Amino acid sequence: MKITPADQQLLSVLRENARASAAEIARRLKLSRTTVQSRIERLERQGVISGYTVRVHDQAERGHIRAHIMITVLPKQMSSVVEALHAMPEVRVLHSVSGPFDLVALGMVPTVAEMDELTDRIGAIDGVERTTSSIILSAKFER
Image (tube, rainbow, N blue to C red; front, side, top):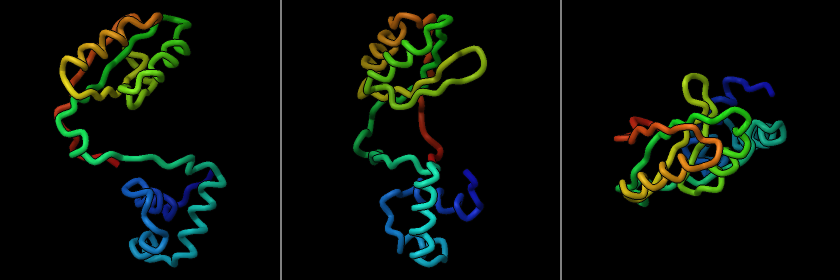
């Protein structure tokens, strides 16, 4: 998978709005619509673009509590812990990381009480040794 600087620019525009038309993207990048469409198709064929997703407007989840939940997993329990976390819709993202923790989850719930309950449920998963949480105060930017 070779990604050119032009592909990076195209991917950046798609990250902002994956529903943008090829004509709109072409105008922003100063390319022809045909060029944009063929680049998108090539990136999809190569597996660089593996899918599209929905980003919910901040106002729709205004007031929701978001937290990074750092998780330490017991040896040989990673796959079952990941499977259990995947089944929790409140866990929006899960990263495997280096350092003192094995996983970092992004949890999102409507209230502090529900975040407390979510972290308790995560801590109760067989194979989870401990958790540490940090409430997110604000996002400075997202791409």
